[in-house]
Amino acid sequence: MRWPTCVSIAFCLLLGAASNATAWQIDEVRLLVAEQYEAVDDNMLRYRYQTLATIVRPGKETVEQVTDFDPNREPGTKEQLILVDGGEPDADSLREFRRRPQPDEREEQRIRLTIQYDTLELIEEQEHQLVFRFQPGLQVNGREDSDGDKFTGRLVFNRRNSHIERVEMNATEEFSKLLFRIRQFDVLEKFYWLDGRLLRQTYYHDMDLRNALINASNEITMTFEYPDLQLAKH
Image 1: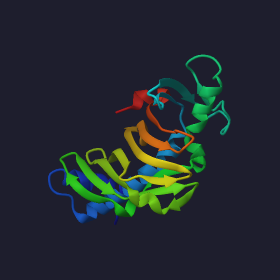
Image 2: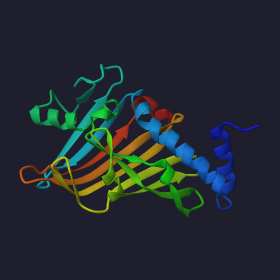
Image 3: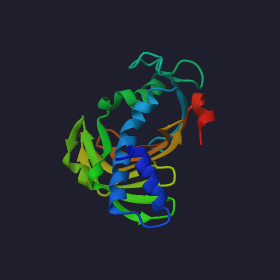
Image 4: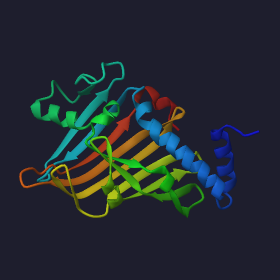
């Protein structure tokens, strides 16, 4: 009889903490990574969360924004994600949070990086962590793009608690896309296990995108808090 996946993985990882993980265990981890990462954005649609975003614009101008996402507000409206750091947003701040898609707007992201799970390769094994490298996938306007091979990826899996800890994806060379020259494209996400589900803890990107007319470069650090779930955090 085969145990449910979560039970079998937890058991084999517990055994693996005292010895090297087997190929079978690594395959099980790949399945769990895919299951957890694909569910993160959907999980975040179910609960209220707040974000603190620090945005560094071209010229090193720094802006801080606090937002509050409420799943009970109508999706796709500006009221679903509101600025809570004082009053109605002005035209500039309104444009800022419209440019930062929320989980239910994934299809609207013009450039998006994904994990190609079949490329996950174990490169380091520690007592409580498994470290993988992988080949990211690149989606442009919702379609797979061949320039995904210009990125590298690294994923850290917590083998004690059986969940993803962090995902990094970085451009390794310059390339052109959507009329922009992309000189830098770095993404770092950190996660924690909260009330039985994987949720995003922080999101960071540093992007250098420009052309002859527009400098769309920015650096963003976002921290997520889940007020209704804080007591369940472990």
